[in-house]
Amino acid sequence: MNAGKFFIERVPAMNWEFESTLVATYPTIYRSLKPRFCGGCLFECDDGWYRIIDELSRKLEMESGKSHLVVIEVRGQLGSLRFRLRGEITGAVDNWLTEAARLSQRTCERCGQPAALRGQEDGQVRTLCPTCATVMGYVVE
Ligand SMILES: [Zn+2]
Image 1 (tube, protein in one colour):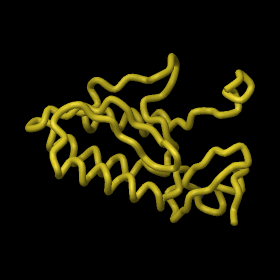
Image 2 (cartoon, rainbow, N blue to C red; image 1 turned 60 degrees about the horizontal axis):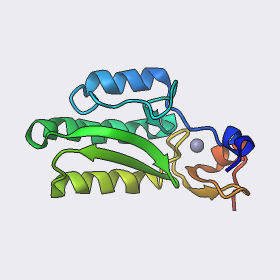
Image 3 (cartoon, rainbow, N blue to C red; image 1 turned 90 degrees about the vertical axis):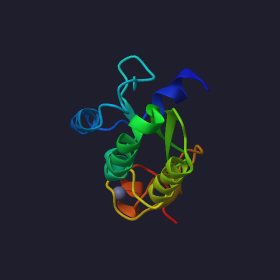
């Protein structure tokens, strides 16, 4: 990957208010979450997935006392929401993570509307509704 391409592939970032709300509402699980990059954000995805993250966080926070769960990474990857956790990943926790990932694959990362996986000519993929895909230069079939 050359420097020019890296510049074009901006890392999606959740808006600051959403980030601080999540961290304040679920202080146990997000106590160790740090940006991966200097000046980067904590939640590397767009605002459309906020409700999915909020719902998952609520369950994880309730479970965290028992399983010592700590979130170490939240990001969109290949059009799907990925959470990396430390702690005891029980069957229930694993199900919640899978469920959230599945839901993200049908939810526009930008606006939260029903969506599908879209590609860009350079090979990038994201889950976007038709409107956002057009705005962001992704292919709408
Ligand atoms: Zn959208």
